Image 1 (cartoon, protein in one colour):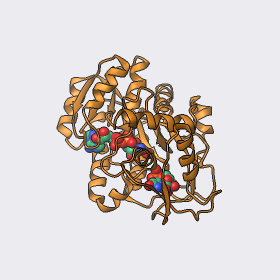
Image 2 (cartoon, protein in one colour):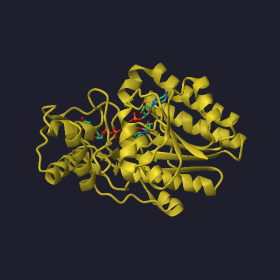
Image 3 (cartoon, protein in one colour):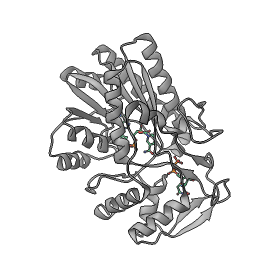
Image 4 (cartoon, protein in one colour):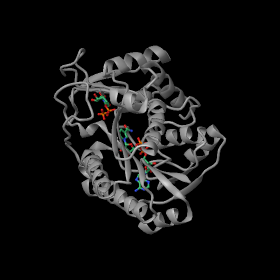
Length: 332
Ligand code: NAD
Ligand code: UDP
């Protein structure tokens, strides 16, 4: 019996693979390296001292995917593989819908063929759109403003529909808030393609001198210091949330939906100041315009995950900042 980890060479997938291997799970990683590299697989082995099977397969290649299931006894899937850049999704909607939706449909078709009936899916807080109140609960209304978010919402719907058609099909939908940080070893972490869109990869690149300054996207929001507030969560805490979700769907049928965040929001300036303080480095910044599509504040109500999965994030902002810095220093 194995767990297939799609997108397992990526940022969150690689950290989850480590946690799975550390707890003795048998995993198979599948990735097409569109946003990652083969070295990550060696790093996972180095950290865990465990081996696993790997397939360089694109989810769009249904025949190759079929072969993975044919050759292995896969009874659970953790599905990370997907394109994730919001701005790029606006420019390349067809590519995003094709990769994320068609890729997931292919996966579900093959899972059905091989009677594989458990899936944990990477969704995002972006499905809440601009929430009317905070903190965000799982039953808040859902909406999206870009193709990336639309793919997440559509896949959530598809998974619910498959569950309606087959009650034995079990689903955990995990809505991530803002993952940052890296594994303590500094061997795996976030490696964005090109200029980073997300804040932490940008901050670390300013701190090492690759970029001159961070542009803070707006300081006129209705927040304590005017800059955007987000619920940053350590990627290792997030990774552990997948193990809890897996346990949950092993023991319970149905569709389980959970926010994975810390429940606490920090502003851009608080993040920058904390990063500077704990790492003793300077992060130059300037205040710029708001980024189109951004919301003022976003943080999770995490009570459901705590109550139903006994999962809570344990790592604070300082540790996240230290671990992000450690990773960039080791991988300049
Ligand atoms: P990532 O880009 O680092 O990892 C995704 C992996 O999937 C990459 O290794 C990529 O090569 C692979 N992949 C993409 N399309 C594929 C395909 N068609 N076939 C095979 N492999 C494919 O991204 P991440 O940050 O680790 O995110 C993982 C998942 O979590 C994604 O679905 C993302 O949308 C979601 N998510 C991420 C964040 C975040 O801030 N990082 C927040 C919310 C949700
Ligand atoms: N942000 C910023 N400068 C950057 C990147 C991001 O000020 O170069 C801000 C952004 O406006 C938001 C927060 O940092 O308030 C987190 O942005 P990110 O893109 O990391 O995640 P999001 O929550 O938008 O998915």
